[in-house]
Amino acid sequence: MTHAKRRLVASFIIAGVLIFWIWAAASLGSYLVTWPKWIQPVFFIAAGLGWALPLRPVFRWMNRPDDIDS
View 1 (cartoon, rainbow, N blue to C red):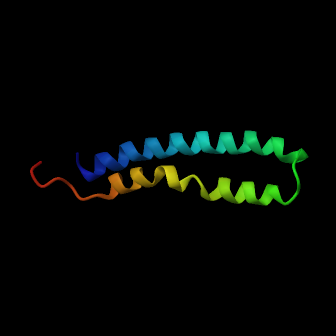
View 2 (view 1 turned 60 degrees about the vertical axis):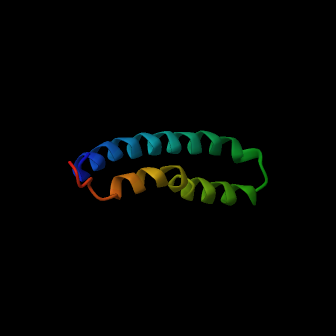
């Protein structure tokens, strides 16, 4: 698969994961109203930075060099 095709496929994967991640963080964040105030920033920092961990393999796959034999 060429680099351009991998970027296109990865773009759709990234968009889908981010849409789900934002929805999940916003849904869970609405339940934090009754939790202690010190937990709220910890949750939102983790939710704000945590999306990159599951997408790391996608970024690696997207940025690898093209196959030589194709």
